Length: 256
Image (tube, rainbow, N blue to C red):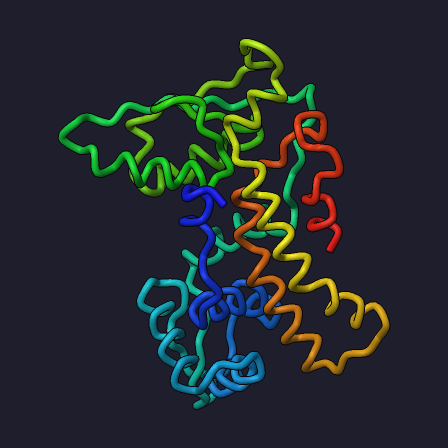
């Protein structure tokens, strides 16, 4: 796998599982949970009480959760700033829009002053997480539907001043556009991510389809599958099928 995608694939950690749990379940129950219930559910997923509480404190320190007792019961609630962030994540994780050959492209051109060259890696990292591919140093490309999200994210992290965004109908390249796409994105590495996800969770999906799971088992298997999955739609731009390898494994990953 390429170093560029490998460094962006988060490891399976207790902290990642806690963030996945918060993003997928807190809103389902009204935005608040009793602390004891949160720790119990995370314990079902394999976390120790100490790890659950430590990682919840870290999420709280980042401003996504706030401690709030209700009727004398200690608990956590989602903060106001968490909701738009989670909504944006929903659009990627559950929506995963697919581009067609008739859709426009996004081109991002950036120039960072030498005195602030430390920001270049951060900018490249943000663009990778948005699903953009690298055309040349300082020139990145992605599907046109990423324009608003790209502008929003770059503004939030204070990098928009170094970028100029364009929409174009079709890049004019030397040779075939399909070949160029394979240069801009590491599709082999992306395929490896999908394959790992499928191999890790296909059996659980078969058990679920057969009704061979208790509620607790279904909760744990779903949470772990979602935790494994949620980074992939950020790294996959959703390119047209015409520009992807034949029998693209991403389709099976999406179906799963």
